Length: 125
Ligand SMILES: Nc1ncnc2c1ncn2[C@@H]1O[C@H](COP(=O)(O)OP(=O)(O)OP(=O)(O)O)[C@@H](O)[C@H]1O
Image (cartoon, rainbow, N blue to C red; front, side):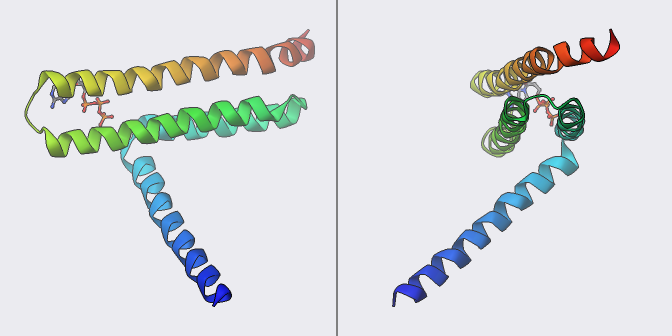
C-alpha cells in the first residue's frame, strides 16, 4: 500500500518535472533575453570555477535571474491571453514584471563583480 503511494507520487513528480522542463525549453526558444541569460550564467559559472572563487553566490544569482525571466514569460503569456487589447492594467503588470527582471539582472551583475572582480584583478595585475 505504502510502496504504491510512493510510486504514484514519484511518477507524478516526474510528470510535473516534464511540464516544468517544457516551460524552460519553450522560453529558451522564444525569448532571446533568456538565451542570453543562460549563456551569461554558464560563462559566469565557468569563470568562477577557473578562478576558484565562491560558487554559491554566482549560482544563486543565476538561478534568480533565470527564475524571474521564466515568471516574466509566464505573465506575458497569461496577459496576452487575458488582455490581447491594450489595457492600462496590462501595461502596469508587464512593466512591473520587466522591472523585476531588470532588478534581478542588475543584482546578479553586482554579485558577479563583487565575487569575480578581486580574483580577476589579482590575475591581471
Ligand atoms: N496588452 C497590453 N496593454 C498595455 N500595454 C501593453 C500590452 N502589451 C504590451 N504592452 C506594453 O508594451 C511593453 C512591451 O510588451 P511586450 O509584451 O512586447 O513585452 P516584451 O518584453 O517586449 O516582449 P517579448 O519578451 O515577447 O519581446 C510592455 O512592457 C507594456 O508597456
